[in-house]
Image (cartoon, rainbow, N blue to C red):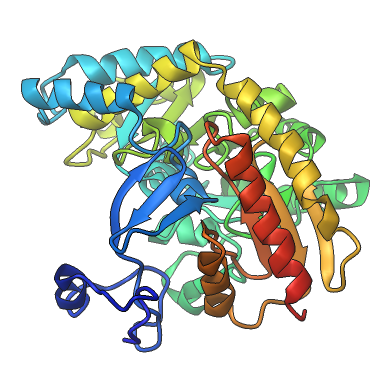
Length: 430
């Protein structure tokens, strides 16, 4: 592995020794640059072992919405650790997840009233798919086991979630043979695409369990935006064909688009909704799959075969749920959504110089998401290294340079990020 951990070539022993035994994510291990050794994090900053500080432009894959190492979340986890770090959720119950479930239900629209906890967003999607499929089994229609998803969509790397994702996103297409086949179509953005989706739903109605979509923003598929009307069209079509509508809010949940949840912007209530990423403020792994009363009642039976047979070992982990409750405290006590609005305005100002530059296809902002889409990025590793040289941590995906900072980022820190993006876009040859 190339020796490019930092400029001073002072690689800590734990990095040099440990890299021989780990498999890094989304990386060709033969050619990937050594990851940057991190000493600590604070606010919007990542502090490296050689003393350099980077402003994090992506909030640790969109999770650290309150910034790193927030004292309120840290204290809540420490308190829970002293009391009980974990106990199985089968046959036992404890305070943190029950409090969290009640609070989530109170925040979510409509009758999304039942919360199933797991450890990751991808698993939350798997649970949602299982819920939707068994919903129809329990109602005597076992053939309804397929789903419609959308071009540009990404729902995770586990098999079921992978099958819902656009095969052209990332390397999912290479694994297409291991996943079930489902219709992947265009989002209903206008009359033509709505009619096309209507025809697909009509053709496959007897086989379909539901529709799954990332509301307002398709994240890993390229930070593609769509408006609330697309979601309203999906709700109308789902109702027309009696399909379950699943909103994957792993990325968009907890304020990222400007509302607490993206579905609020559209005033559309899905039948099932998934949450993760920022649920714990970027501290511990946790996810939730939330179902409406209608979905839950299909499992309410004297027949044990109609129960939802799923149960992650660390389901409803006490530490993670304590962190999530503390994160919700911060949304209640501090002006997070106003901060998101301020970030949106700053991203508009800061990224606007990219408009009209050679090779730039689009500049767009939604909430605390800023995107510069270019024609092509030839060497992702090289451009990521250039951002490091400018003192920021930004990781473009595909042909998209994006910022998803912590909601607590200072104005000067955010300006450093947008200035870095503008500088790179001006210098690079697209």
